[in-house]
Length: 255
Image (cartoon, rainbow, N blue to C red):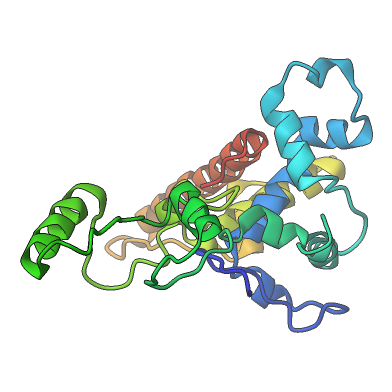
C-alpha cells in the first residue's frame, strides 16, 4: 500500500540530477537542512559514542531516526540520497520518518480478531460495537452520541493540517516553505561570508538572496533610509528563523 504524506513530500524530477525547485517545495528538505547546520548533531554524526551526548535523550533519538546527515558537494543530491536510503526492508528514510502509518482508510465491517485489535490500537480509527437486536433508531442515536464525543467533523478538506498527522515526525504548525527557503539562503550566505573572513551588510545580503521589502515614496532621501532599515529588520528576522529551526530540530521539532 502506498504511504501517504500529510505535508507536501519532495519530488525530484531525476534522482541522479534532482531539480532544486521541486525539492524546495517540501518542508522536509528544510528539516533535513537544519540538521546539517546543527553543530551538535554534526558532532554526534562524527562521533556517535561521544560522552557528552549520552544523557541527551532527545538528540540521541533524532540521531537514531534521522541518521548521518553529513555530506560533501551538492546538497540537493545529498538530500535525495538521504531521503531515498533504506532504513529497513520496506521503508525509505523519508517514508519511515514522515509518512502516515499504513491504515485502511474506509468504513468497513470488522470480521476478524486481528483487524479488531488493529482498529483498537489505531488512534485514527474508531471501533464501534452494535448489537443486532437494537432498532435502527436506537443505533442511530447511540452512534450520534459516540460521534459527538469522539469525533470532530469540519467543512472542507483538512488533509494538509499537520496537527492531524500520526507520522513519527510531523510539523508543529503549517508553514510556508518560501519563508524557510529565504531564511536558509540568508543563513548560508552569512556562513559563506564568515568562512571567507568577509563582512557583509544586511542590505547586501538581501540583494544577494533576492529579499525585497516595500518602501515609501514621499521623500526620496527619507525613503532610502527607511528602505535600508526595513531590509535590515527583514534580514535579521530571516536569520532568526533559520537559527531557531537549527536549534529546535535536534529535539525532533520543526516549524
